[in-house]
Image 1 (cartoon, rainbow, N blue to C red):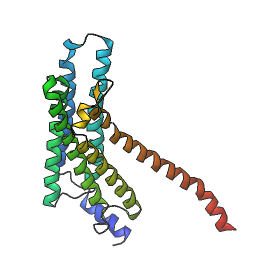
Image 2: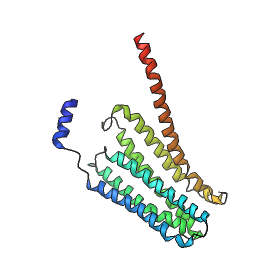
Image 3: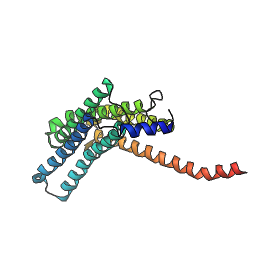
Length: 229
């Protein structure tokens, strides 16, 4: 089908209708963020110093960042990935469950008794690991050349993103091992420090992509000049 026919077809059919499960997803992400904010407000009486306040803000910021990053990635994927397949619908439901569970586990981890913190952190790591694994699965589906869901020049980028998220999910799963709770640094379990690595991987990937694009742009004039000669 030519580009002209494709454009005409899109004009006749109109914009892609927003599936109801996608609307539900936006609602669940919004509620998850709201629950975290409400819990932060409910903890006001426990704040004694500016250090306590800063700690609560940083902790909430971590949970907020996770949900925002997942939501942005999810929205980008679902703007292209069709919902018709039962597997896609099932993974969507599983993803929404992990998103809705995240604020609860995070607050148990922060406000629960000392005896519950270890298992709560394990459940929390598994929750995030499953969340990222599902996003990785969606991303690999977009990178499937046979399905032709994205332009060919974007397939490599989606594959790299999928691999990055799969590695991040694996890191969260590995962090559930007991050794990462019993060993501590600055009074905190190693497990909490390991959870920073997935964000570092994402930052490195974006940084690398930006550098590659700048190199390509810098080489473009040279290629043009050589072609003229």
